[in-house]
Length: 159
Image (cartoon, rainbow, N blue to C red):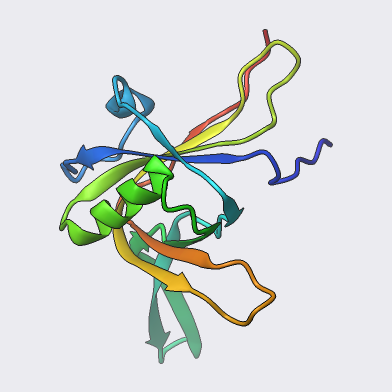
């Protein structure tokens, strides 16, 4: 078993993307122009979770559970504020829009001579707030990415 650190991962934002209701595929992101969001400290989490639909079956005295709607959650991203970073500027602009945007997360897990794994998804930027805290802290940008699509997993590949 091989484990990987989050260190070295890169997050990118693309352009506004129209969702059709079908699951996205890697091909849906072909031709996208990506802008790296720099100074990340934390990338949060993403991935589908089904809504629980419980049903109390009186006849058998047991609660049965079905799966309902799926949600890929909210990815809470924390970055050190960098006013000149085009990626952070794009995040602020996306927060002002009522659109979903393409996002790409690239991990530092490429085999020698190969390509790294990636996660591709569409999200609405629900928030882009600044956190200042006390004197001995780095000022931070907190972005909430409301993931509105499935998460496309691209596995790392060898040379």
